[in-house]
Image (cartoon, rainbow, N blue to C red):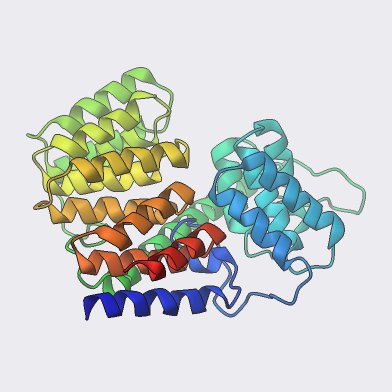
Length: 367
């Protein structure tokens, strides 16, 4: 019966994949930004195939190839409904290869597409690249004029708008995690990471604000070390350690990822271990490096620590690149936990790339 359910799941998701949904609809949990709503795809649009190809390059972090494909789409299909989406993703790809060109690309995108579904994402990306540069907020007063510098009030409004956009993206991610927990993975032991609502002591609140203030400069070595020490200190209140750990993960320090791995492997607090796994999955390092790190953890964690193993599994599935697909295929074929095998099939269907579909075909061939 378990085998029959697994095969049925593979057939179901192959059918769902063949409906030609764009990958961002099925992988809303990979990018926190504005994915197309279900049913809003346009497979009859002549740019659709090109858009899917470019997006698959984004998923695999082939930034230059992705940028070229999206630029080609805009030239060949300027009237396509995917044209402004492609302009955003071209800027996003540049953000990983050429900061100066990315800044210009984001400014142009926001100015030309104020009603795009990706405008909030573009604003947040731009603020992260250049927090003090607000020139793109106000359009020219007349055609042909150059953009004017914003007034102080406009600067404040822009900062509020960017903060709200970032909160909206975080909320989307939390909603998707909750949906995944209650529907996709009903047998999961680990619950999604949600904001704390319990009242904290005033002294703890002050300490948390101090930690957040320290994390504003992500290249300050002294701040990184202080945050690392607090995150590792088991005598600190758990909310303080959580904020310190999240702050460490945002730093550009090359030791940040290795510290997260240490916490995930050996910390005595299981909730902190799971949080460290989540943060590894979200880290700024390349996807292949994150997936390799998580796979090593998955293989090393004892099977009786199911909460950690499932957290690692979800983080790998959420990254969704080719290396993650290979891992999911292996779980779906040979893991002893049939619930986890079915979930692996689900995620392969959700990823929806050619490599993922090939993995589903291989699962169907298994005896």
